[in-house]
Length: 609
Ligand code: ADP
Ligand code: ASP
Ligand code: MG
Image 1: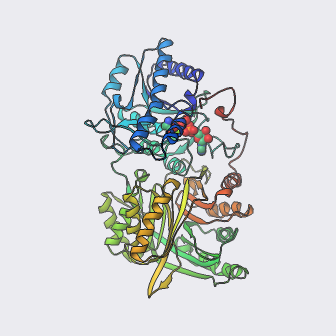
Image 2 (image 1 turned 90 degrees about the horizontal axis):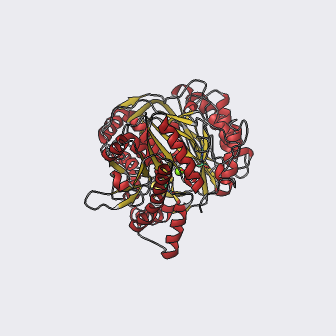
């Protein structure tokens, strides 16, 4: 077999660790395999280098940062190679440039365009183990600029190399036994999963589970690379990431071709919106508990933020369930209204003639222009968007039924892909629990823009401006409530961006708001995003209700909600994030068995710092 093994920072964090990596590689080699090793920088080297740069300059150029950070991996490849040779195994270390890992000329976040496999294959033929620096590449052949792929990017290097040399398997060795139900640093009772689908893993990884770089999962999924995450300390088999056999794709433009796989139309949808309900813990829990009692399945759920002390929650259900859902919403709103903090009148709105149209694909991660392109295509066709809900791998819009076919046509054309009507996601088997994992993302900031005119093209404009500055947007939520300002209906839009981008997003949007006459732009970085993921939650009533109930019991207020078929995310106050993850993990019964010990945090495995 041809095997790619990737060893992360802690796995090569000391001389002892490097020699045990070398021994594992040799054992694999002796079992009649050819081995390519991809390594990260030792221990916390990359962080140390970042801090060094900060001491020299407040704002170093991205080019010089790449020059600096790429050195970390170069140390490890040389040492791993030496360790192999010292044990009698011929080996050769190679940098990203030497291997021919060509990337875009985008410093600090380059995407891989192509990998030339010849040199790797030649050295393998000579009987050598090839040790390659992860995280780095080289720009075009003329410039030969050293680039890096973004923090955590060695996973992506490894899977891309596996695709380029058509390896039989790519193994990611790290400091935990595999993929766990949540981050064991936050919840020590997290449990190992034997298997997970690449769609589930993509959501988890992009929602903050740092065990795998999301772009690595994207490549594994797109090219059908068998991927395993396991511990470099034990022989435990770890977790398999399962991808359905993909259609064959060219290896040129590896990380940039076909970012959207399909346009999906779901015609069996009806919308229920509750306006002006109180903004306090327990409200969403109460509503969705009652709905789950009726065995009604909810699909999209969104809750946006508002001025004052009220919120709106909107959700979609199948057309057959609309009457029941409406009855619950109407029955519950007087209960909510009797709340003394709710001074305004609550109101229930239903709409039957709606459909959900989505673009789906792993390649949307970190490519903000794609959602903007969807909104643009809909706007050009004169289609107004009633609800938007996004995850990293899907953007869904609720629009009026009349425009369904038109929307399908324009989006299939815009993204040059096939349309799918009323399809369902893949699950491993029927026994799979509805929720597989919980993720915490502390790196997001929430942005809200008030009073945007409710006509086609407005979201397109907003997200195109952000996309131009390469600002990725997640959890886009358009409010249900309207306000008439100078004779025009307006709505609010809220979304999240990476904290690092919050400041530039604010500047760009304030400029736009001024020009277009929108209302205020508000940014809040003091938030955490807590998400649950599971392909089997489709068609199961009560999953959302359980999630919201767990938060309500802890008196945690939900600021925003967004869902896709296989995940539900809530924005809560930063200080509530870890507690929320622990309680939600417990509520879904994911915490059975013993606590997980992380080797890097125990003294017998010192790591470089
Ligand atoms: P490496 O240096 O090997 O790439 P990372 O630190 O990047 O390792 O990723 C492994 C860490 O990811 C674990 O130590 C764990 O704290 C964290 N993590 C977050 N979510 C999960 C999860 N769902 N399963 C396993 N590990 C997770
Ligand atoms: N060394 C790089 C980092 O710390 C890449 C990696 O470890 O995956 O981000
Ligand atoms: Mg990592």
